[in-house]
Length: 192
Image 1 (tube, helix red, strand yellow):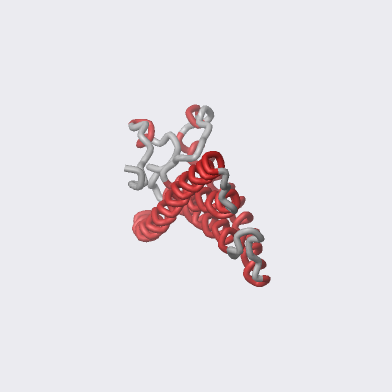
Image 2: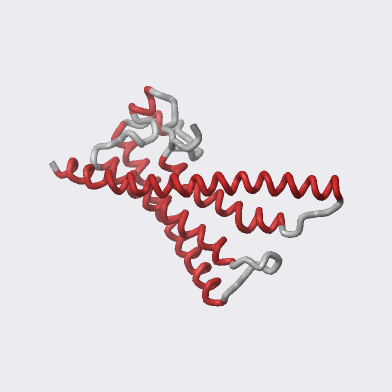
């Protein structure tokens, strides 16, 4: 059957995308640890030793926070850890629920294609002009590049989930029987 062949073809794509997401989730986790260490060190240095750390806010706001946000997007979608309002979904039949979830996933993909495109343009401009951070001297292309990368992975994950739904794998749809039986959110394996 056609659906079986498509599902079989999607499995290696899903595995490869999951590996990328897991790797970037580790990077986001390390960036979060770096934020905690840097903010704590900066506060201790400022208030105990009257010696503020130059550039700590720039590192946190301009480099680490974007990495935390955009590198975790796709993994969060995969494991259904985004905030969702499900009170309408509980009143829908399976067909309407599938259609509404598909429309939402396609809209997510559309929005993040636009964000990825703008991020890519900004990254290209920063590379072409050699822009660097005024305080830190670090290339701005590094912080801009996380936007198109994270958004591109989110778009791929969103479209992959849609393809899985429409080929019969409904395990990742909100309030599917698999989710109704077990309120546990599927794990990424990173935080265990």
